[in-house]
Structures are given as C-alpha cells and as structure tokens.
Amino acid sequence: MNTTFLTRRAFSSVLSIFILLSISFILFRLLPGDPISLMFRDPRLTQDQLAYLREKFGLNKPLWEQYFIYLWNTVRGDLGISFYYKQPVTEILLERIVNTLMLLIPATIVSILLGVLTGVVSAWRHGGLVDKVVSGSALVLYTLPTYWLGGLLILASINYLHLPVTGMRDYGVHYSSMLEHLYDLASHMILPFITLVLVNYGGFTLLVRASMLDVLGEDYIRTYYAVGFREGRILFKYGLKNAMLPTLTAISIAIATSVSGAVLTETIFAWPGIGRLIYEAVYNRDYPLLQGAFLVIAVSVVLANLIADLLYGLIDPRVRT
Image 1 (cartoon, one colour):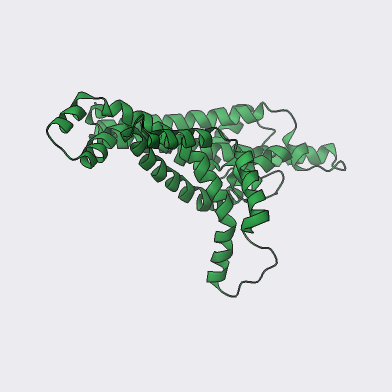
Image 2 (spheres, helix red, strand yellow):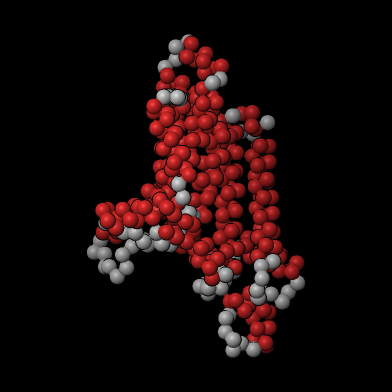
C-alpha cells in the first residue's frame, strides 16, 4: 500500500473529525436554554453568583474564543462537566463505553459471521427452498421493530426461560467468587445479546446474498466452473472475496455504531451503556453529555470508514490509485 494513499486517507479523516467538532460546537450552542441555569437549577442563586459561574466556565467570553478553548480542551480529552451527573463527561463516557462494547462487539461479530455464511449459502442455492427460507427469515428479522422483539423475549423469559431481563447484575447480591460474578453478568447479557444478533443478522444476510449474486453472474466465475474448480473454492475464495467489497462498508458502519450503543436495546433491557446514556441525556437535557456522546460516535464512524478504506485498498489495488 503506497504512502500517498495512506496520507490522503489520513488527512481526509482528520479533516472530517475537525468539521464534525465544529458542527458539534455550533449545533449545541443553537439549542435553547441557559447552560448555567440548567447546570445549577437553584432558584436561590443571585445574578452575581450566576455571573461568577458564567465567568468560571468561560461562557462570558466571545463565541470565537469559546470555540478555540473547546477545540483545545477536546484535543486534551476534556469534554466538560455533565449537567445531571456533576461529573466530567469523559469519566462517564469511558465507564459506559466499556459496558456497551462488552455487549455489542460480540453481538456484532456473531451477526456478521452468521450473515456472511447464510448469505453465501442463500446465493449459492438461489431460487431453491434453502434460498427462500434463508432470505425470507432474514427479511422478517430485518424489518422487525427492536422494541417488539425485545418485548417478546422479555415475555418468554418471564414465563419460560427465567433469565434476568434488566441491568448487568443482581443488586444486593454478594459474590463469593469471580466465577459467580461472571456467571451473573453472562446471564444478564443473554437477552440483549440475542436481540442485537437477530436485529443485525437479517441485514448482513440480505447484503451478502445480493453481492454474491452479482459476483456469481460474472464471466470469470463461469470460467472457473468450466475449468473444473471445486465449488467451495469458487464460492469462498473467488466469489466471497469480491462480494465483500460492498459488504465492508456495512460492516465498518455496524462496528462504528456499536460504540454508540443500541439505544432501543439498552433502554429495553436497562443495560447501562452509551445507548441508554444518550436516552437519559436527552431526557435530562444534559447538553455537555450529549455533545461528548455525539463526538465519540462521530469519531468512531470516521475511524471505521478509514479502516474500511484501508481494507478496500488491500483487497482491490485499483482503489489505491
């Protein structure tokens, strides 16, 4: 991979992050309400005290000066103070990101692997019973509302499965060993994990199936069949490799959005991740927290796209030109 391609993509990513930072700054200053009044909701505060607080947080400075302070603080990892939690936004986000990644990364990986496998099989058996069953079930899962599927699993758990339906742990329980703690955590993860896998699986299956059908119709694939190459080798070595090019973008976006958390799934199962944190921040009008979460999601998407572009360059040399 040549240096020019890497430099061009790295510069493009840095520029995208800078633009997103600027949009984030402008967007949240257009929102209604006085930040100091929202942060310190005490009617007993005098005008002098409010003026002192505005000076302390730099809100009395000109907007352009606030912008450069915001950029400098963001580069240093300082995202401000949460209105609701009265804690640094960075500390709150780090704690919730760990909870989110613990749930969403395994769910995303499993849904990708299942989606790729069933998408290839469905395209291979195009028009047959297997294709109809696989693509039909994938389409149903893709269109199912997350809250409906999550609610169905909660009902099944209450009546039959008897699995925990909220949170990450049983509160008030003393664990005698680390193994017992991990078992409790795993039992709480099962329902949101299944929900996320089923919700994501359908989209990946349909995407891989469509890409594979395009590739399997190419002349070079027919040539491989004509010269007697094994079908498994044609499908997975030559067909899937080229079909993965458009799929890589969807996978990179799926991984990036996993950082943002699944707002609906985490809210349904009360999983204390980034998704649920965003819901709480909107409910509490916690603008610094929302701004920090927006920044984390935006940077994750940019980095995921950068990784996808680099993988594109590795798979297809024409992209590097």
